[in-house]
Amino acid sequence: MLAKSCVYYLLLLQKFLLIMGSVDFEAVSEAVQKGSRIIDVRSRDEFNSGHIPGSVNVPLADLEAEFSLSDSDFQAKFGMAKPGKEAEIISSCKMGGRASRGKDTLMKMGYSNVLVYAGSWLDWEKNGGKIEK
Image (cartoon, rainbow, N blue to C red; front, side):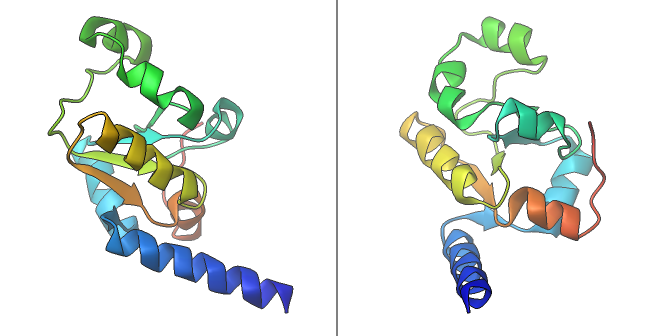
């Protein structure tokens, strides 16, 4: 019974994220090929255990501070240019919940094109996406 409840709530969360500007495995796969900005808001340990190729780890707790860095400091710290306010950013985590909160944080900071990877890391693994460590 508990397992059915968990599955129900996960499906409900995924449907909610789809309504709220999210992307799926196929869209993220295309984004990886294009070199789009994927921000993984999981903890550093979670990220280091495996992540979507090309994604950058900015833990949720640090997101606002890191995206408040100057362009040059952001570049030096993350090895990529700081995204512009209109640039497409895909927020990812383990299941989608933190990614959604990450999207909210970035939107409040003025970023206007932030998408959530519904299902996030668990969906990436389930669909056989390439893994970087």
